[in-house]
Image: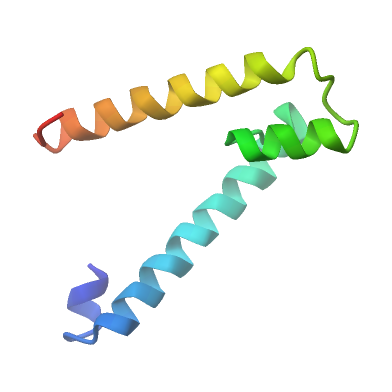
Length: 85
């Protein structure tokens, strides 16, 4: 959609996609932050553990769950778009 709106201007299309992705990420963080700490990737969990907000003994479980969710999401997206695995 951004390519159509940008009329062939690739830089503008990339900027539009970046802003939309960033806005969606901010919305997710604001929504899930109070509930779960918005641990959306392993870097967030490790940073939180380094700051003392997440106990180190729980950090590996968060990382495994995040990696599992990422792989499942990728498989689901490929299936929905009929892309090869």
